[in-house]
Length: 76
Image 1 (cartoon, helix red, strand yellow):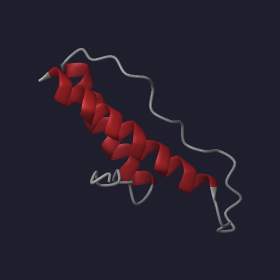
Image 2 (image 1 turned 180 degrees about the vertical axis):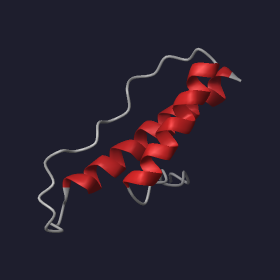
Image 3 (image 1 turned 90 degrees about the horizontal axis):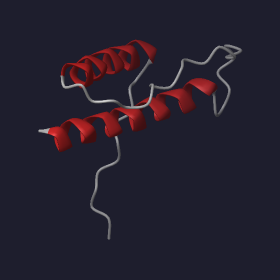
Image 4 (image 1 turned 135 degrees about the vertical axis):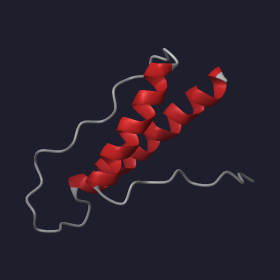
């Protein structure tokens, strides 16, 4: 059984930008190279679609942040 908690996902684009900036600064301060964070979507139609591109983006940011935190822990 996997007892790991799911990765936190940012609530919105503003929070995603904050998390990326904070973790990016921490990675840079320790000279840790990690792939670029996901790019914000540009194709949202604004109609609140089920499965909106923003949902996928926020999930991808959550995963990138998880990888960044792991890299920071491994370098400690």
